Length: 80
Image 1: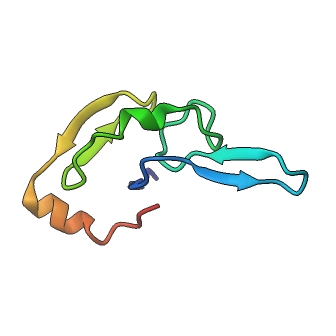
Image 2: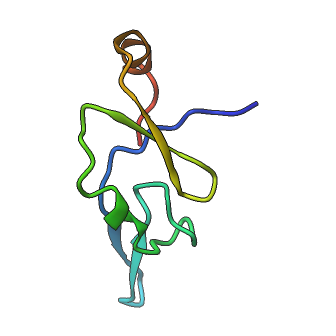
């Protein structure tokens, strides 16, 4: 079954390994190399936080959701 996961972060998380290496973890959900950041968070940097932006499986923007009833329903969806 498909799932809706809403990513609210607009930049990656910096993780330092035990060896001292930096690894950038994708938090926007659009990375081509998920879970490693590919820089696609730059696409979401200017998005309005009050609108739900919808992307296809390839990370292409396909629309927005602004219907107040649907947005109210989605308020309780798990966000990462």
